[in-house]
Amino acid sequence: MWKKKEEKKEEKRENLLKELCGDDIRLYDFLSACLYETPLAAISKEDLDTLTEEAEKSGNFRPAVDKAIFEGAQNPGERERYVKVIQNLASKTIHATEQERRKVEEEGLTDHAASLGRRIENQEFMSERAEDILNVASKFYNEKLVEREEHGRREARAQGRKEADREEKRIGDLEKKGREARIEERRKMGRAEKREAKKQDKREALAAEERKEGREEERKEAEREETRIGEREKEEREARKRERRGN
Image (cartoon, rainbow, N blue to C red):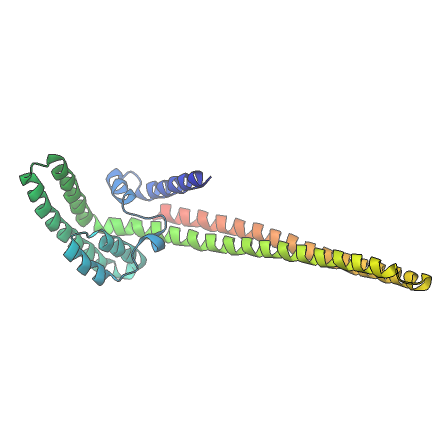
């Protein structure tokens, strides 16, 4: 079950990315390897300057690049600045990779050298297409974040339904115990007291039924609201899709 859910998520991610990249296969190939389904969980919480400093020491610029793309996607008003940041990170990555490639070539590790060559090509592409990368990443991550919010609300509503079901069961159990207790009490009563107790039981049963009907109506209204919310979210998704295609 978990595997099927993950496969469905990955298919949905690929479909969105293909929609955004259109016929630009090279851009799609690049972004499919560097954008995340759950960016808030996958991308480092460290600030970009710290990640860049750490990368300059370790030679691993990927966390800083991921952060720069995500931040640039979320800040369209600073697009030009983030384009330069990404190009700078690409330049530093290329420099570090070229040094590593020279070493492995001297050691005769041709396969590794070829892999490093492809990394350099990817970084050159990122530098050349930084603006396009940020444009697609912005739409992709915006959609992912909206989906995350929708999922959070659905989870909260589902939890609310579970709590309502537990409360309904608790009330039912209490009412059952009350009925059983009253039956036990009537056994000790005289005839007149029993008649009065039975009348009281009927009044209690009627009140309990009315309360139950009220809770049932609340449950049905919650279900209707869930349907309305689902329809509204679907309409909003379709609207965002039309907007993406229009852009």
